[in-house]
Length: 308
Image 1 (cartoon, rainbow, N blue to C red):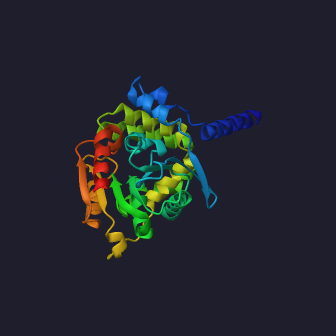
Image 2 (image 1 turned 120 degrees about the vertical axis):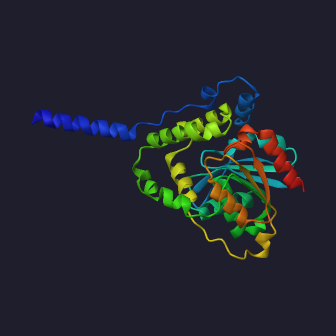
Image 3 (image 1 turned 30 degrees about the vertical axis):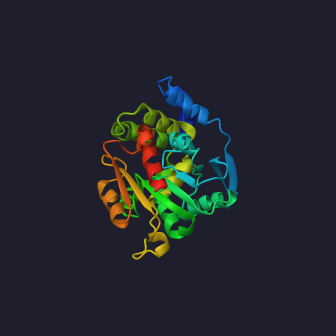
């Protein structure tokens, strides 16, 4: 009897240890294999002081570069595995021409909450209107902004993203139910594995893409943030059949990659059908993160679009 009790205690301790095992943490400089200008510039960029505001009880942290208050503003919104600094190469190239805001999505679980937080940042900085650059779920949030806050958007860039759809919902609804029960370290391990097997090979096996994403899943992103972003991907919002004139006239640019492993081809086509007035730029075999592994070209495409 005593032996059974001891074994039960040991079993429970193992289960508890398994669940509460901490996600191992690794920083970019530990993962990225080169001592080069990419490493130096990212680490230098991260020294910039970030700003914070609170909206509806949620803290929003963001980078803000004020070009003397002159010129137009660009608002960068990252995707699932990202933060404010994923855009650093674009920011460093454009900050002398534009005011720049780049946010890190906090653990918000709805498009409405995400949009309201972004608008709160714009209000705090007294910015009436901005260009919006969103990639992946950031591009999905940008679409929601266009529909619900058209007067705040000058131009919109929808990068490697998707329109409202039921494909992701049907594929992931069962996973979403059990996601809160899965230990954080298991979630992060599985997404590092997905990055290594699918995302990185499609991104020219870029060491930068690999190192940045692995850092995200080595403790840089929390489970709450991950679930919030996952919820946004699965949220459906109704697109008007006849969008009002104010939204319709917002100039739009769709950026995609023809081998994007994260956005199905059928969704890329639906996005273009949804916005037939949009310009389209296609990266050839650059994967889901062309702004990381093709930064100069990506920045050039953005700047050209904004200067029109």
